[in-house]
Amino acid sequence: MATELAGEIKTHARQALGFDLVGITTAEPLPGAAHLARWVTDGAHGDMAYMAETAHLRGDPRRLLPGARSVVCVAMSYHTEPEPPEPGPGARHAVVARYARRKDYHTVIRRRLVRLGRFIGEHAPGSRWRPAVDTAPVLEKELAQRAGLGWLGKNTCLINRNLGSELLLGELVTTVALPPDEPETDHCGSCTACLEACPTRAFDGPGRLDARRCISYLTIEHRGPMPEVLLPAVAPHLFGCDICQAVCPWNRHAPRSCASALATRAPLGELTLAGLESLDEAGWIALAAGTPLRRLDFPRLRRNLAAITAGRRAAGPDREE
Image 1: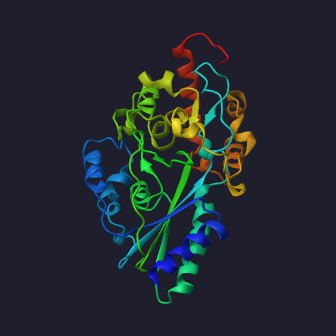
Image 2: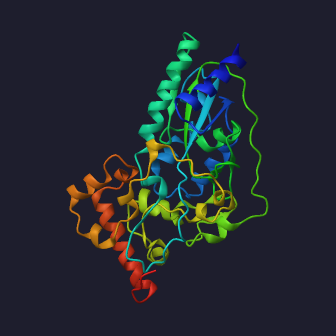
Image 3: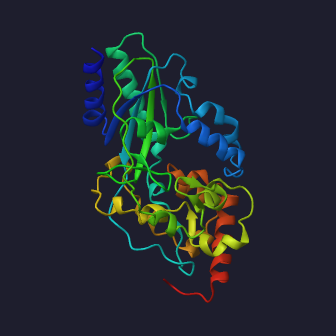
């Protein structure tokens, strides 16, 4: 019965709900909790206080849903056409991470997970479930690895052999006991392209990311001023960074399988510094509405623009790249 239900859940998740990857794992505690605890103790989480406050919860899905037995892990690809190498600090446009140039994935994935939960409830009366998308206190990438969706790359991203690493993840924690899938094994081999490409040297080693030097952290999560020494590397990034994924060999031949619900909003890939400088707060709110960019409030938008300008200045004479 449980095996049959697991198959029906996967089929429904793929065919009716449009998830690219679906896998099942248990709700047992995760070994990665110890790594997370060390990471927080070392201060590598920067000023993301919520990581420290919830670290004790993240390693055990049962804390998210008491009585949980299984976790259904899903992923949606946002891989579209390849792009030229990221411009240097002298470029006159602002770079927005590829995942943020579209409708907010939290909304898209959560709504589909709710529908999947209702599907499970119909087939397992009396069961309970809870969706999680990124903001919930769970180690979602480790859960996805344990469910067979991919492995944790040296850049800490989840990588799938067919779809690469441009994946958006979600989880449905449930009290239903389902047969787990086999975990995925590591396929990075001796490749260190992602570690070597990072312009701020944010990686202390494979799988060891110091958020305090990460461009994504600095442009999105960080609340204070940018470290001056990193400004030339931060420019021209406005929101997030794709460098460590752009150089990953597993992304070179990944199919362009982005769902229509996550279609790129062209203007968000063509933002000029001059155009952003001219925006008032209302204009920025309107531009960012309904996308991950709404995480960036107006004062930090202005801070990031100032950091880009300072980075360009520090890098030398203006040049278009």
